[in-house]
Amino acid sequence: MSEPVILVEKNDAVATVTLNRPEQMNSLSSKLRLAIGETFDALQADPEIRAVVLTGAGRAFCAGMDLAELSGNADGTSGFELASVGQDEMANGMANFEGPIIAAVNGHAVTGGFELALACDLILASEKAKFADTHARVGILPGWGLSQKLPRLIGVARAKEISLSGNTVTADLAYEWGLANRVVKHEELVPTAQALATDMASCVPHVMIGYKKLIDEGLAMPLPEALVYERQAGIESSKQIATSEIAERREGVQSRGREQSKK
Image (cartoon, rainbow, N blue to C red):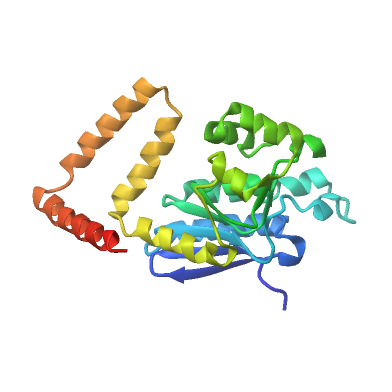
């Protein structure tokens, strides 16, 4: 019996999703792309799960598209046809998950794997993490947001340096440029990501979901329009909560702050 291409571990409100093709550096075969989409659809439908950690088995996060598969099959299926299988399902599954997705990048995140990391809400990097965009060297333009998300995240000039050279970006440089939120010891990567996901999942569920949406949709607007959008959302949110609930939650926030100050 073959190993599943994706593993899911649930711990309270957090799911850890592991790409499980270590011998192929977790490259995105059509089977894996479909599995990613199905997995995120299932997690979105699970009322208990509010945050996800995405990582890879073995020494890579994801080496991009499965080039061996894209060489075409004996049955005459072209590489182009194979490349399209599961693409929409994978992209839509991740985009439709309403909670935060944390990429725990444990090794190489290359081209399609880089795009996979950027499809998450934030990136935590192992000291062994390496990022690269080789679209220009392979000879194909990106189609999953890399050319638009990367410059918005780290700046136009730095994005052009990465994408127009195909050079590798180390974990430390990724942190320095704002690509990764932090760099941690390799063995601490997944536990650190899970702890952060747990913190996020412990917030008021519908507000956490609304806040992620507010940030994402606001970024697609001009600033004046986004400020109006935020104000309207804030007013609607305040109408839906009783003063007693705010007081109770405020005490919880203060108590948590006191506990964190002791660490």
